[in-house]
Image (cartoon, rainbow, N blue to C red; front, side, top):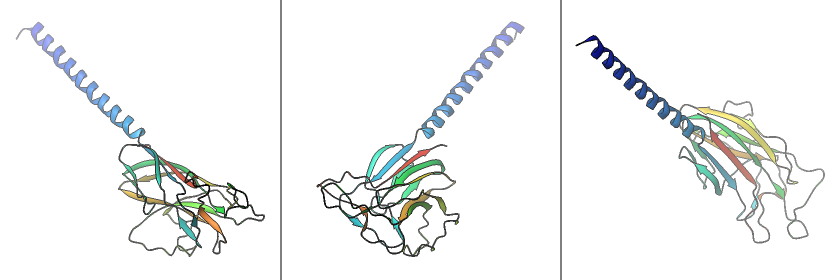
Length: 208
């Protein structure tokens, strides 16, 4: 083989390697971009009024506002959200209200109002939790992802903002408490024949 022929062969092989590497890089970038844009938003609307119980009350979402990808799923029967392995940004709110006011499309306002907040935590199907006991899972437990800001049944929402990472399929849930003896406080209020009153929402975006 002449020196010129050998040189041409080296150039051809080198060019093929560069093209292959570029193709792999583009594929990796596309895959990462796909992961970055995976998201879901679930909302708990009010198809019926739902009275609050003592202790922790689980938010049970009713609707999917938007979703991209299959790694984020919600069970509308239990409120449990299942996540594929990865890291996530979690934001949202949870709100409760006193019973309806004397006028249509109003709720009762009280002062002082019952205090409370929401909590986002990991769900372990193997552990049965007494939801009426506010201390059944301490807020300092590693299973608690975050605690929301204070809120009241004067339709003042409890807001949360957190990150969560899991190396295996995981389950999370959102819950709300307004003390051990909530009186005429509702997780959902159905009025004016409309379900479109959003009492809780969770926004989940996969980061990696």
